[in-house]
Amino acid sequence: MKRVVLISCVSKKREEKAKAKDLYESALFKFNYQYALSMQPDKIFILSAKYGLLNEDNEIEPYDETLNTKSAAEIRDWAEKVLADLKKEVDVDKDEMIFLAGDKYRKYLLPHLKNYKIPLKGLPIGKQLQFLKEATKHE
Picture 1 (spheres, one colour):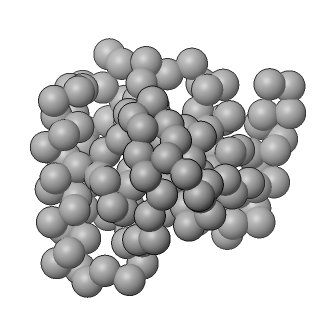
Picture 2 (picture 1 turned 30 degrees about the vertical axis):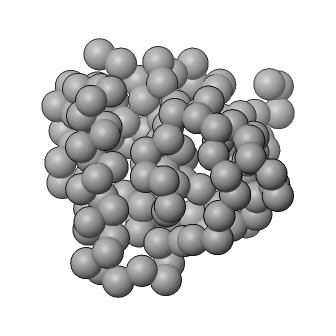
Picture 3 (picture 1 turned 135 degrees about the horizontal axis):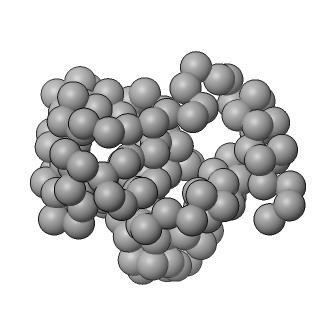
């Protein structure tokens, strides 16, 4: 069984093309990424509102797109594409998926996954940052 971490994209990005893990500049993303690394996962993916499922080393252009402004139907379509790509990379029935992503990014994915965790579920952003800072302070 593999351990897979899924991190959602954020609005604050670099202004030039970069690897996905380096494009996103917010403190929340950076702490989520550090926390993901601390779990020593087999894979880390980024859930991008524009590009879908990204390998952390995929080079992408900056963009201004979020699931927060999309309709439920658009988010469902996005999730179907992400799920299809995820199935090419991991075993969605056996592998453990760890979501460091908000509800909009996971809502339509979770029903298709057998083994998942949401360590920051229900925490407001400030509490998430507090948890992540504490969890990664020795990294």
